[in-house]
Amino acid sequence: MRTVEAAKFVGAPPDAVERVLTPRRIVEYEGSFTVRGVEERYDATVVTVGGPGLELRLRFEPRDRGYDYEQLDDGGPLDAMTTTLTYTPENEGTRVSASSSVSLGAPPAALTDRIAGWKRRGELDRLLDALAETVE
View (cartoon, rainbow, N blue to C red):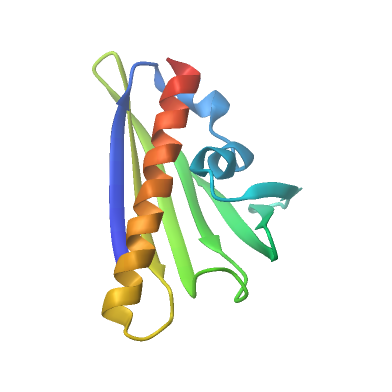
């Protein structure tokens, strides 16, 4: 398992970030998959995403000022993926932070998990950049 982190200061207040930060938009902002469906459940939101020849589900649980989300399906590109996304007031704006643990589930784990982490870090950076562009 490899953990990667990303953070960005956004020049908008937390309520502006909260208004646009939805499970659907998080997936869209990450840029790797297309949203195929959103199911609102009593305790979580499940987003079905896909790409060429691939479909999987991500389960989003709201938390105070953010989300925890994870890959549900074994058929996804990763063996496991969990992410915590949070935002907190800072100065005249908001600090948005993401931490994600990923595992490709293929040997040698030290190498394949490093590659998965590198790709995941790129997704988190795209997410934060797109969010900042939307609210600033």
